[in-house]
Image (cartoon, rainbow, N blue to C red):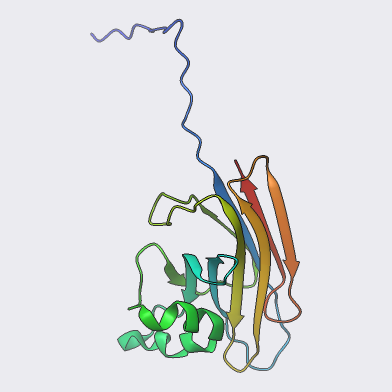
Length: 170
């Protein structure tokens, strides 16, 4: 017979190590068009001089045969010029499938899980979307890293993107 004895630890407090993080909510609007295709979306962080500090996510058609989904990545022009043309897709931890209309929240911890560490300073979150038989849109949200207190920034798209929200926590 097995007996379980409760154990108490007095004087010890278990607390997780908290790391500063960036949570991004991307709204993909439902469009009433004859031929709807899910948009390709890229998220990255730029420094004030517009150099790339971190490539966060690229959502594209990853399931196309012979990796043909990469053919349209260049339609996200800013991302392509700054980052994309130098990558071999898919990129572990960065690339993923397109998303359906609705809100999608992703969290990034700089310095962990393949996200580059950010030096203290001013940055801009950039979100770009392009859709086959559709348009292209790019939104920017400035932020400070690391945040001294929780901070939020938002931007609103007009067609390919809806509301974009950035929550930065210390």
